[in-house]
Length: 481
Ligand code: GLN
Image (cartoon, rainbow, N blue to C red; front, side, top):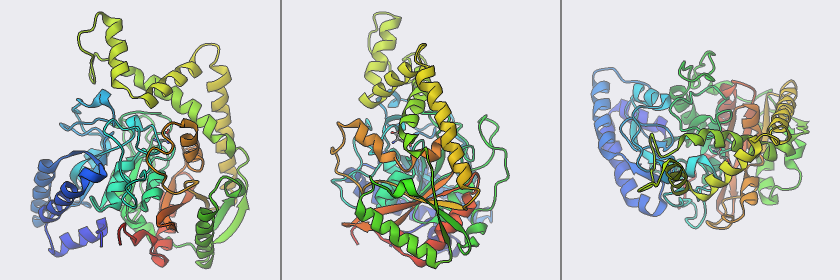
């Protein structure tokens, strides 16, 4: 059975195995399975073993941090000091980060071991991991299918047992959607809960880091390490950090769960609808009270997101100019040629599409019609949620409209790809936390369910998910078993 973070900590504490031994196990498994799954862009075996040795020594000296000796994989958009940070792009294929992102520094502080950097859609733009410069990732449940995106490498690596847990980021669904398609648990925290310092920026007002793992209990452990106020991120929230693991036993009895009627209308595959209905019945039996709610502006989320995310991306990605770092074209004729060709060669098709749309939306004459309008609608979407949370504790929703699709099936249809995010994107616009957890299967492929919480209520979400995982075993199922 695949080991979770909790199992590994127990094994390390009891002396059943050392960090070096367990790290070697994972590195061997990566060597065997990664060539076909393509979950990792870089495997950092030497660093991992060095960190594992240090962790074993720290534990022996009675100085074990909360994740001491636990192997982890990091999405390749967290800057890692001295290690390539590619962001899935040719543009950063040669970029060795000169510092650690706060998330990485905190993982180090708590004793975690880095196995490597995981594959992802280029600059986190995508829902299938097919936009990676390093090629698609195979879904461990069916290698002909996508793992979801953009944290596809992280989700598939956890599902395939190449790492007990991984970091990811979520701008419009990139933790929750791949978690759902790979049958693992992933939480997108409240905007501001996890520092964005050292995360390669896609859309700064939406990007948020979070963990992917087998269970809510493991997500609680990772989030504890990843989260916290950081003065180097001006949008980091200076709020108290609860003890997420201590809060896990909060249960569900008497909690009110809102079911947005718009989410259960057309668009959702009926077989997924049945799986989610069963989960709803289960939650009700566990003592939750169900309340029908309405999120009236929810259908605007996708167009609003794609205006805002592209506008922010076009601005963020203007820093890649071939001068300071990243890809530079050969033999530029002059400065303009250097900019143009470096960017033309360094960025893939989806990234270019977004830069162009974003630039258009921000240009004088269109700004009011698109960007400003989108910001106004964003506020209405946020207000819908705020109103809903005066009546309920959590909101339940699907994560994806369908199960994992075949590699290539939507590659030439950006709009149908964008529609994959229909249930996830609104949270990012509102800045709310959401957790995706396994709820069943359709034709042997995992189906996720999403619980959405009020601002900074990750504890409540983790407790609700943990309660569900105490009475179900979907999160324990493994591909090929
Ligand atoms: N799929 C969405 C997009 O392509 C969200 C990606 C993300 O969350 N990073 O923008």
